[in-house]
Length: 312
Image 1 (spheres, one colour):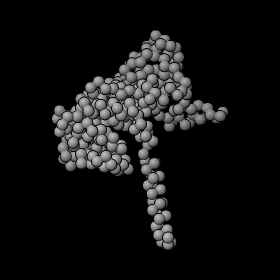
Image 2 (cartoon, rainbow, N blue to C red; image 1 turned 90 degrees about the horizontal axis):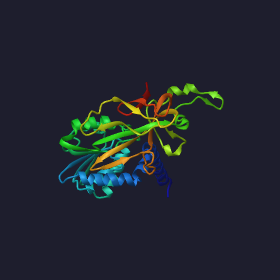
Image 3 (cartoon, rainbow, N blue to C red; image 1 turned 90 degrees about the vertical axis):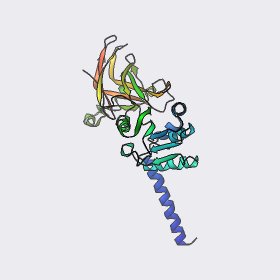
Image 4 (tube, one colour; image 1 turned 60 degrees about the vertical axis):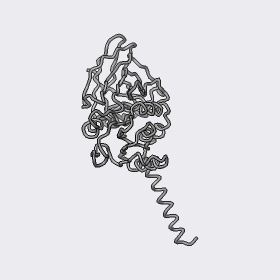
């Protein structure tokens, strides 16, 4: 091999390595856990089989690697549009769809759904919009603003949305360890409280079973979102939580019940250790002492991507 050819080979290898590094940084690792979540995959497949009717145009918002679009065709759809904002993922989805011989039925659009225009980016408004852009607290990936836009601009009259609804349930939680993921006082004898100005005021993920904790109250419904027809604006709700033990509440642990239609529900409750979704911890600004049998009124607030909790 001459020097010119060797140089070209090294250049191509460097280019490939660069693309690989960029891809690894751009694609969150939770995609692997999500795709390997058998309970989630099975539930989505069955729900799509029950929802899709012959001749339907399906819009999949948030392609990822293209799994839901593939499932939609498998369920009988012959016209699927799927959009993905991450250009690397969009290209991977296009590749996966091609490898399964479904490019004839599925169009991949590398854009956010809020950038789509019916009649330009997709052939017409969709009869069924499918989206699973949910985090541990249901709304953290922008489900609410995405569906507000989709209902107004991308859904055909009488069209359906999957999931049509989703609820959040939760309870008071005592856990110095979990609270310490978001707040600090002293470290190695040094006062580090200045860092607390950067603490998350909204929810963040935690695998509750991993850490010492006490659930101090009965479970209760925190919020019920009617995704298909209801108000998806920012809001708040006062929720009475009923302690079953004395203790110190550091916040609220929450999980979703995502209705996929037809009685199919996905949950990330603390006892569902097989779910790739963790639970959501919604911290209080300060720890709250609670007494058994003395109701604690918690205000749950939400914006487009975050859940907040406070006690008056």
